[in-house]
View (cartoon, rainbow, N blue to C red):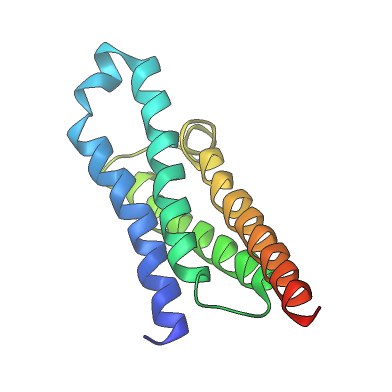
Length: 134
């Protein structure tokens, strides 16, 4: 699959899976808000870890750079889709400050995970290279 298409597709999935889960568990938002607010970052973290793994697993070089690339790309994709849905004159109307305090800030999880996984994959790759050369 084309690299750019893969980044966009995975970025959309990073947005879609938590959105689908939030839709399913939305009644909790009113009745058990703390539980809802705990589930959503957990779902985001799980999908980002899984897709980061699948994106990075077959790469051999520039793993940190790729981690940064996918993290910032997926962050942008998630913010763009959300802002189309949540800003005034949109279906779920929310002002920008409320959006970032309630949802947007959570997306910082995305590049934190992808960069961390890129660093880990790079370190493992370097250790394997050193071990194989000795």
